Image (cartoon, rainbow, N blue to C red; front, side, top):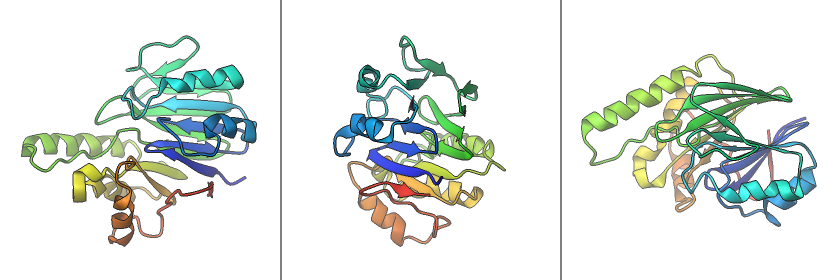
Length: 228
């Protein structure tokens, strides 16, 4: 079965595989009926991930979903305070769950990035693992960030990913594409999904008209699921 990808909002996305529904970094959503309606529609075991505790990646509303849909598992970065019944995971760790394997990378901001293997697919969700280059910051700070980002990307060398969710932050202006550009040049993932742009989606137009190693591999999630 192909995967179905749903855009929720900002860095929030859902991935439906043959036997599972995976939800990453829920903050808000624009789905008709919201995520609870999607849970009922899909009718599969659900795993909900939060890469770190920033308000735009972790909304405690996710914890209420289990009231109406009990077949649900939570995997939270360990910078989030413990929550009863939820798995917590730190950087560069692996967690085995029924039907899926979760591994993590170290974020260049806070928390983790996720690599999830499920139903024959491998999914990468970056959280805030990104090349955070800021104009006006000291060169030394930007160099430290570059080194940290590339070090984590080295851990994906030789790993075939079926879909990757990658930040393109418009606050960085042209520098907001550094992360996806480096990733696309060093990984053969066929489906690159931009995230983390909710306040200014015009960066997607910039991405589409800019020549780069992502050409032919962009998956811009809009209305309805995208099948890959």
